[in-house]
Length: 374
Image (cartoon, rainbow, N blue to C red):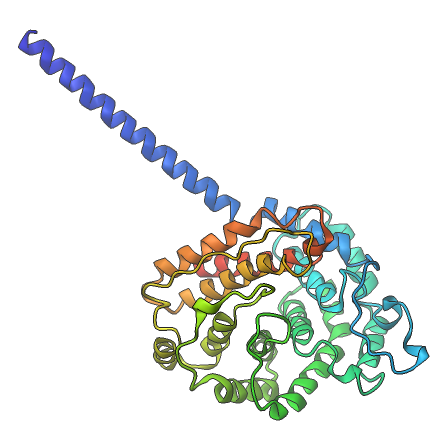
């Protein structure tokens, strides 16, 4: 082979390699863009998510009541006791279903079915209905602690969302719901001094979760008494904690991470320097070599087993949130992304066990990711 032909062949080979590298690079970028789009909150994902709470906030049955029957008069359909929050299988899911719809309307006003959503909210969040909800908490001595503190926290998150939306409908709904927010705030203030030990579980009664969402409301609406009691009790409960055993998680029915929920509230009540020092003692590997796999769900028709999809979302929102205060957060964000991706495309599976509540958890995880990327 002549030398000139050999050189030409080599040049063609090099150009072909470079072209392949460029194509591979472009394909990789395209795949990453598709992946990012699939786990981002945009109009398309918002329209898919809003369908789930729209299907359930006026769906009366099935319903899991938290009622303790103290007299025959207590035996009424849920809509009689809870004319605002009677759908979505249980009270707290109905509450955060309303939060989901409001958050999506607020951020995507042109969303499909917006008119339908506003009509349903108008129907449920009336002054009369909210007063009846308040009455329920005073029905008897057993209803005083109804939905403590999980449902309480979501009710205040709903109030916070309405409070921060400059929209005529939102102002009306907030005015209607504020007396219930005030009642829940008062209940927190009465209850927290009596709670000697925090509840460190992965389900509804987790104290850290109940404090975290309530604290957001207190800060946003300038509820000073609520803010101060949460700051005080959170420090009492958690400031001396060390070495959280996150490798023990999850339990089989968890939808919250006890370790990460504790981090979430302490991030809010401590200044950054104090928080970082506390975190280094509480979960020292978080910012270094944390290994955490998404919770695996084998039967989404089982109302308890499907909790682990919720765990994946709540882990994700906790990790995205703490990543905002970490200098080196790549590993933390990667783990959050893995958890979000694992469950995000599985929540609309046609089974009410997950569909009645998981949209809210997915949405809050997407919201937390969006806030990190700002």
